[in-house]
Structure formats: C-alpha cells, structure tokens
Image 1 (cartoon, rainbow, N blue to C red):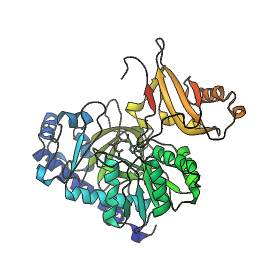
Image 2: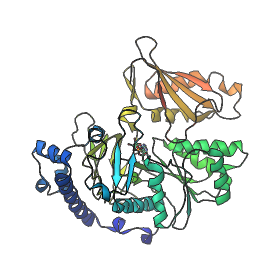
Image 3: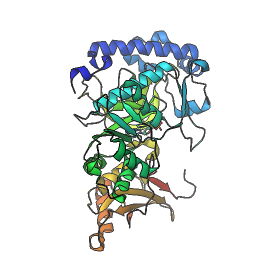
Image 4: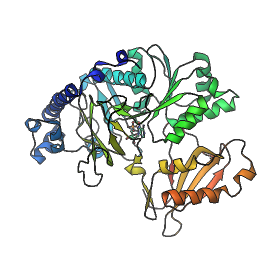
Length: 431
Ligand code: DLL
C-alpha cells in the first residue's frame, strides 16, 4: 500500500475530515427535515431543528432511527428523493415481518462503488485484478453491492452464492485474485475443493473479503491456512449502505476501519441509548453523511462492538470485530452467550471442524443448549472418545454455561450458501 493508492477521502487531514463531516451532517439533517415527514415529526417531537447542529457532538440531540421505523414507513416512506431519482432498490429478506426497503440514487451507487474499491485496495487488492464475487445477488445487498467494484478498475465475476461445484470450476479456470463471500460460504467452497480432490492452496486466490455475519480470528486462520490467502473482515448493513461501511486492512488485520468520511459512528448503551466513550462496548449507531435517496440518522444497528482508534488509516476509527447482534444473544440459565464465543472455544480442539450449530430446547422449565459440531475429515474414533465431555467442560470454564456436545460426522450438518443460521431454536413459544 502506497500513498498513491489512497483516494482523496483517505488523504484528508483530521481537521479537514471533521469539517467535511460537519458540513455533510448539516446537509443530511436539512435534507431529511425538509423532505421526510417521519424525520420532521421526530425532530419536532424532540424540539430540535437543523439549525441546532453546529458541531459534531450535537448529533446526540438527534432522534434515533430503528428498523421498525423503516417497516412503519414501508416501502418508500423514508426516501428523501422522488422515485424517478431512485436508480436501485434493495431489501432485507424479511423473515420476521415486512422487509426493510432501501434505495440509491446514481450518485449513491457511485459513492458505494468507490467505497468498495477503497475496501478492496485496503484489503490488499489491486486495480486490474479479478474478483470472484460469491455474495448473493438479488435484493440482498451483498452481491450487487460488492459488484460496484467493476466501475473502479476491477474485473468482477458475478457468480453469486450457490452452485458450489461451479464456483470451484470457475476459480480454477478464470484464476481470480480475490474472492468475496460470507466466511461460512467460503468454508462450503473449501469442502468442494476437497471433494473434487483439488488442493485449495494451489489456486490463484490471494485475498478473501469476508463478512455479512459474525466470524472469529480463529475462523480467519482456518480460511487463511486452508487457501493460503489473506482474509479480511468487511462490515456493512443495508439500512446504512450495504457492504463497505467499514473494512479491515490487510496490513493490520485489527478490525474494520470505518469509512468515516461517509458514516459517522457512535457507540450507545443498548438499553438506555446513552452515548458511550470510545473504547467501551455497546451498540453501534451510524449516521450517513453523503447518502441522497435514503439518508439515515443515528441508525440503531443492534450490532455490539467497540470503537477503537485508527491504525491503518489513522484518522478513521475502527470497530472491533462484531461480537454478535443483540438479537443473537442467547441467555442460557442467566448466562449471556453469543455463537462467536462458542466458535472460539471449538477451534481449540483439533479434531473438530468449523461446522457447528447451536440447538436450544426447553425440556422442562430451563433452557438447554446443545452444540452440534462436525468432526474433521479423517478423525478416528479414538480421538473422539470422551471429547464431548472435554469440550463441554471447556465451554463451561470459558463461558460459564453448561451445555451438551453432540459430535457429528463430516457432512452431517447443513452448509451455508450465504449467512449461516447458527441458532436453531426448538423452545416452545420462544421467538
Ligand atoms: O450483510 C451487508 C454485507 C454484505 C456486509 C456482504 C459484508 C459483506 P444486511 O443483510 O443488511 O447487510 O445485514 C447486516 O449483518 O447488522 C451485522 O449484524 C451483520 N454483519 C455484516 N457484516 C458483518 C461482519 C449485509 N463483518 C447485518 N461481522 C449487520 C459481523 C456482520 N456481522
């Protein structure tokens, strides 16, 4: 990475960045106040107007936006431009309730594409390289979001998720440098390499850009060693933009750098909404600074993380890896557990593969958690003997929660083609 690889936004001094952020915050706030009735009412209810925003700290005076607000204004009620200026729509799958719908002007798509290019270059990619894009295409923001790299000097192979044997064939035939996929789908592709008897370390791939779901540093090592590549973490969410709100740098691999010239981050207490100082864990909140079709004010992501000082891009803060979504928090007999906590412990046992799911039941009055995890290929009965007890004891020691371990044979558990569903909730009347 050299100075010339940086774009204008990355080259701003801290003073320039702060004044650019304030200018764009004022424009965003004015736009939503004038054009979006939901925000006009929310501002009026709090007695705040765009004129009250004179410094970045004034952001704390503004109302939060929740996913429910997008649903209440379904489908286009929060858009700040007329429909003829909306070039693209995306939507969440909406497994619970109405989908959340988001929109982009041509200008928004252009800025999104440049942030994807910035993310890829930070991840170690170079213009002119080929990128195998295995994020799902369609209404999901992953595929078409990352696809924006085509306008910025990258050759994009829009394979989408699924058709796994074909993924392997095209990687072998086209020889891409970069692969983009959820970490769990990349593991599914890895299985397919083994199935076809091809050495996954022999491919042309150099970089994997993985995100859209929580994953751990242990999983990163698994992916890096299995393919002999560098793997970095990309973060984003539809309501704020999509992939590329933040992305990790290959040089530091210490959590995604937030592209702060476009998204202003805060960490708040998930229960009270009180703004927390940098370094404390809480819920990530983002305000968009440059979006036209769907500017968003203080969006509550439900993602738990910490804001850290910038490293690879010193003026832009980083987020720690996302521990989990508050929605994925399992409270087992009073103990808080996220799937990522279990993942970290499972990786300590060499005979176990990274394929696992957590099954919650309530046989009596108490919740029980069973960890279903596959053994690695080629592991024999001797190595597995008593392992379940050992793993359960380690999870109890590390996470404070009792559980049962059910070791499955390779290939027994469902595979991901996108975001992996880690929690299978079989408790009656819960969720
Ligand atoms: O998943 C955007 C995306 C696509 C990011 C491709 C990266 C790569 P949504 O479907 O709206 O958008 O889901 C957003 O996914 O609030 C997080 O809970 C989770 N998430 C996204 N990236 C990460 C990550 C896309 N790197 C939700 N680590 C977010 C952990 C992530 N969780």
